[in-house]
Image 1 (cartoon, rainbow, N blue to C red):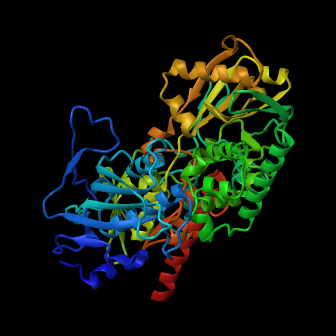
Image 2: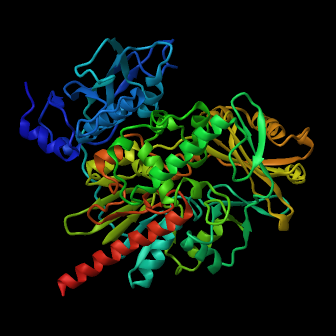
Image 3: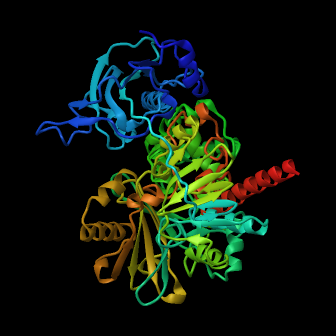
Length: 639
């Protein structure tokens, strides 16, 4: 039995998946796969000694509800393929994801995977990391088949799959409407609150639905014992190119604290040796290493500046991981380790896990690699807020009319109907509007049932976004001991547990704090420790970094928050990232594009200062402008 050609192109044409074989073999064509319910249909079978593996020895799926997917190589939609093995793995898995979405199924419904690997090395199983991240805890049956060569000599990896086909479902009937207005906004962070203010100024009505019991999203400030405030989430702004968020600081009377860069920074290298160096200069490596590091840094800066901020387009860069990009350009191991500090500090990711194009465009959004990483004037980490950055969201919320913000109102479903209305179910209430703006991070979109479903390209983009591991630990001390030794408080480490350390003191409050950023693989190892072990490991590292001893006597307390457990943040922080191929295959605008009466905001959708508070504010303004233009156009047409 062969799948009809018209069926194949109707379902897969929009995704432009290049392959000269039939992509889908369906054992039953009785249902329209466009409307499959995204529910898990696969049961795992385990033995007494298999439950700890990332795959299952067997799975069970309903009879007659199975999709067979042909082998997917690691190429872009134009057929081009990188020579790097890990980049090919990412691209092959992306192609598989695109087919799964086109078939109306999901990763959780994978029954079986076959992995075909050329020149497989059992001592260097690079595929395992990427397969596990792709599956996100799902455990299908997996077979690995080492092969000397695949159908095309340049192919190094191929994957085929069997996928269960979920049952169909109908949208919920939302007949009893509790509140009607022009716009429903999902999320009371900076993006949602900003959008609400702009909508109200234009004469439109709106309501904000917030799942948490507070406003602010990833801006969350907590008081310290005895006075002072720390930021559990976003913490830095500047007063030049972050004009939107700085205007909020001025509007709400926030006191700014300039980041300390007076004194030496320090670097901890692979062997654990710590070397001080002047802030803003390269570390004290040998001359050959310094030249290579400067060359790689300047290359990244030049390549990111060449990209369009809002619509990045470079197929070669997007076909590669950031690590492959660096290695192909001659990066030494020290340069690669330094770049790993960049990606961990900025995204919580390792270079092998993200697209080179995505990372360079992320840098461009903040003015460039050097500016985004800078702690000085114009830089991403120039100013902090004494009262905490949640003051911005609290100020915006308090200046809205009463009843606009609904707390403890998680959104369950969004239903668009043919009469151009849209209904939102949140808790026990139903809200009807003409437009909806969602500001939730893309991984959190999975918690909302959209009817009709989001367009396939947007589904693939949202499901391809990943958070790395990223947690801040604020270590409070009785005195700024590091300053007495000539350090400014900035440290970088190739080995962790903290990849980066920054001073976050408030001298007015006599609070002396070093904020440690645990990220990437060392951060995950740190997270597995008990709280006393976490504190001890950081104190030992700080002693080594800043040439101190017996810091336990100086130490007061550690404060931290694990965003990886926060459902409404999308289980991560500070910003999502993309694996290779997503931008090249789907386009750089896919996430922020509206669909029907549904509009998208949030810092990851921003063009400028993506991942920062500035990006969140700008995205809220953009989404509000889209809605205002759309509704005003509708009024003009009726007149």
